[in-house]
Length: 156
Image (cartoon, rainbow, N blue to C red):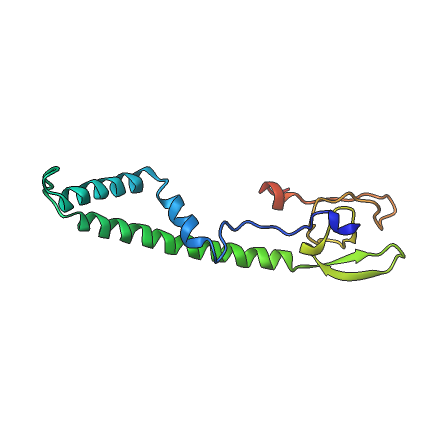
C-alpha cells in the first residue's frame, strides 16, 4: 500500500484562507504590548460606561483606534508574507523530477508527489528534491559530489 507513506510536500506557510484572521489576530495579542494596551482600553471602557466605578480621564476609543491600526497594518504584512510562502511552496512542490518504475522505465512527476522509497534519477547539477541515498552513478569510479550550500547556507 504505497499511500501509507507520507508525501514530499513542503509546507512553510502558517495560515490558510479560512484561519488567517483568527490565528494571526490571536498571535498579535500574544505580544505583550498589544495585550497590555487592549487590557488598558477595556478597563477604561468599563470606567467610561459606569462612571460610578472609577473616573477615566481619557476616551478609550483613541487607544482602540491606534491599537486597531497597528494590528491591522501588522496583519497586512503578515498576510503578504504568508502569501509569498504559499507561492514559494507551490513552486518547490511542482518542480519536476524523473521517477523510475520497477520495470526500469521512467516518468516525470513532481517533487511534492514523491514518497519515501521512491527511486529517482538525478543528472549533473540538478537540485535534490528530498533526502536521498545514492544507489549508483554513471562515472567509472562511482564518485558522487553533492553541493550542500542550499542546505547549510555555506559555499563549498
